[in-house]
Image 1 (cartoon, rainbow, N blue to C red):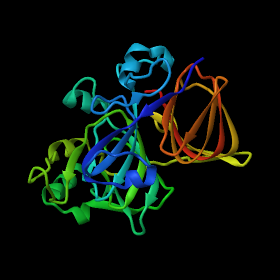
Image 2: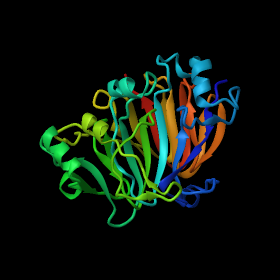
Image 3: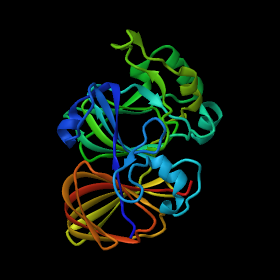
Image 4: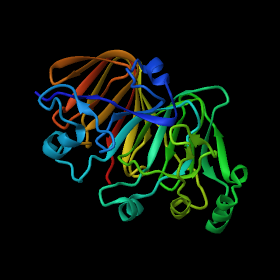
Length: 324
């Protein structure tokens, strides 16, 4: 019998974090301003630990290295995806991420680029994102950054609960104060900051490092919003929403499963599936075994599970690896 891999998250303290992840998800947080829950992670800066079954006690990166059959013998030196929940108690730095080629050349051969996406779990009234810029060419981008013309450069986009944003590498972006989001991304921890509001880290007494050259190098000019083809399928009282998938998104597919009653799935082409329960409770039935699941749980459905059923009343964000 193949079991799901239930995972223990890792929590990351951030200058912009707070304590809302304890309130919203009933997590037992460590001390400090916690900005990120690394829920499904094999990245060396915070790997999740498997809590059940034959692989219990292994971290996800160890499972990837030692038991590749659980992942359909998928290729690649590193587990390609990372699922986070972010709590922006304050605004994140304005930043940009490199693509795979730039990351490998400048950050090390095993560090991936970072294309990501956000499902907005909660947004306070008036909340907004930084998403894109107004520069017409690289020279104008460089001049505006070096002159600090942030109001002219940065594109502000209103945001509300339930919105979805796809953020390809090379996109200037930032979550701002009052937003909680589930992020699906390539497994990378490379961020280039171009503006951090001139704030000072209370622990160091200094401003955080900026990466202006790397930001200018990697930013796509001019900015263009991705054209999403979001599709919703009704299955009984439940719905399956597909936000992104190949070829538009080569690195991952991302879905919302709104479960009301019983929802059945058969594995198609993806070798494994990442699952995060973001609201409600119910049951997962897989390989003849029933597992109670509820909000704040995260797990991987490995290759050996060919079909599964979800029962109850739940909101789930799921993802699968793409073709890169």
